[in-house]
Length: 357
Picture 1 (cartoon, rainbow, N blue to C red):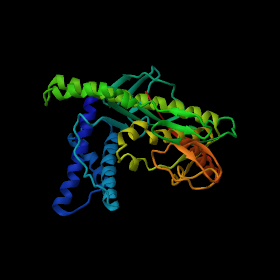
Picture 2: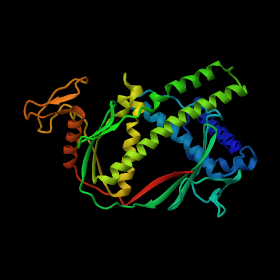
Picture 3: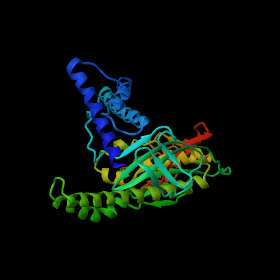
Picture 4: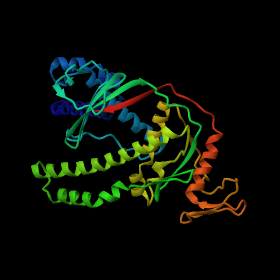
């Protein structure tokens, strides 16, 4: 598979170079279809050895998506970030957009990949539903097969229980019933180990030295371990909430904006966006109702409707209008739940999930 990834990376860089040269020489913009029409001739000439034709098309779609994202950033006035060439060591995945076309699971339990042969796969759970796409991914020296599966929703028994969630940094989340989910701070706890791994890389000579590549691999695996810990924690907590409550209310936060300030490390370590994304797809699958409410004023408002101004350092809520005295985050979660009750309900009958082997 390493050779296939290297060939896919070469095609990616060639497609990018063609777009750049066309614009520099004659101010012509090339799209995906212009480049895809050349694939057949390139394969016939032998200058493109990527085994599967659909994989070649997927590489060109990545290039097209990259340039479209660049133009969108320019139009919005964001930092443009012009598309860059990719190193073969950083090009880590190849996708088969149509299952059965170049990639298929065999009765023996192995995965047949065009250009790589039969590969043994350790499935961490049985594949259910219709497989739509397969992506082969390299991560920190390990290989993964990612199956996108289309399946029907599996609703849970109806529940009238309701909960509001206020995410934070002291506690990962405070619920409207007063319960707290402790913040595990996986990255903070792993900083000492990551620091040692990073120093080991810094001491190695740059270039193609084997010892440096080995140190980089160890650093990659340390970061992957932190990410796995975070995802495992959030999967378990989101599953508990979905199983128990019929209505779940969260804030529609601008996490990207919050992650740009002085609390950036703590915000990234908490991983709020990933947690909410897990709640969304699990709620769709289970037939639960998840509502994202406007976050403005949730920490400055009492459940009685009165405004109670507080600084960030004030962790208690004391309302002079109704006399309520409670934790700031607890009251915020109750306000979030109040706002969610007024939102219209909706339901989904079909979801798309991913399974990683």
